[in-house]
Amino acid sequence: MHWIDLRSDTVTPPTPAMRRAMAEAEVGDDVYGDDPTVQRLEELACELLGKDAALFVPSGTFGNQLALFTHCQPGDEVICGEDSHLVWHEVGAAAVIAGANLRPVPTQAGELGAEAIRPRIRPPGDIHLPKTALIALENAHSNGRALPLAGMQAVRRLADEKGIAVHLDGARLFNAAVALNEDPAALAACADSVMVCLSKGLAAPVGSLLLGSRDFIELARKKRKLLGGGLRQVGILAAAGLLGLTDMRERLQEDHANARLLAGLFDGQCGITVLHDQLDINLVWCRVPDALDGARLAADLLRDGIKINPPEDGLLRLVTHWAVSAEQARHSAQRLLDCIHAQGIAA
Image (tube, rainbow, N blue to C red; front, side):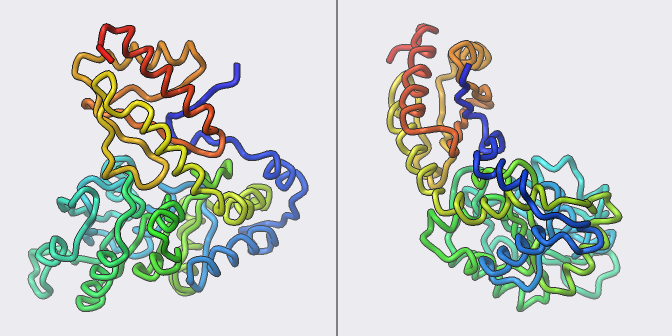
């Protein structure tokens, strides 16, 4: 069966071109720093994001946690959005790896504003207080929003005023740049360190990148080794990442368009309400009826060859990527409505 997988953009298979590039990749030992394909990948990422140095890492969580581990000393505090990936989906790793304390702050639909951050910055000189060492932003946000550049720039100015570093969880940074019609380097300029995923919409099978100053990346390289992230002939993976940063980056708008297509086909039907203010990139968030049996919906669609994650707390997320065509989006929308209607929920 040919599956239509709408669970996430982490499920993307490598493209045929990626598979060929991986098979033919020139490799070396990246711990020694002599894998030429990794070097080309890191250099290209620096060019695109305007940073001095980059480091290939196994995953986005690894990259985020390595950034915290490099920026922070044990006991330091990290200000971040209460709905951020750092808080919700990284297994409390900041406490285990960096020994840092996350200070979650309410956001405006994912946007962590300077006005919310300022009163949470710890004043120096009080022995009872931890040090505020880092502000962590996320763009695009996992709620589907591409957050405005102006807000990020305001946070950057505040951080400079207070002498605090900024890290950007840019797992879908290139999606955000496309949605905002901004240069990705402009978004990256708001942070001292940036993590970008190669394995979501960019379709590489494995890997992320951490970028920053040369001194920061030199220290992060040693800490990557400490964490077991020093890889050897990783050029096989970096070859796919190079195509992610070139060919696949340039077609992200197609995924965004297919997400809007998918959303428009079922919005307002069978009690479904699409959250249009969160439809900036390739994530479709929608509210579903309370009476809907989410587990049954997922099982029924699975029998039709469509994979989804069941709704949680009344919200359903569907994600488009290169392996979901416009025609497959149309088919999925119709089958979704059919399955909901089969539960006795009126169209």
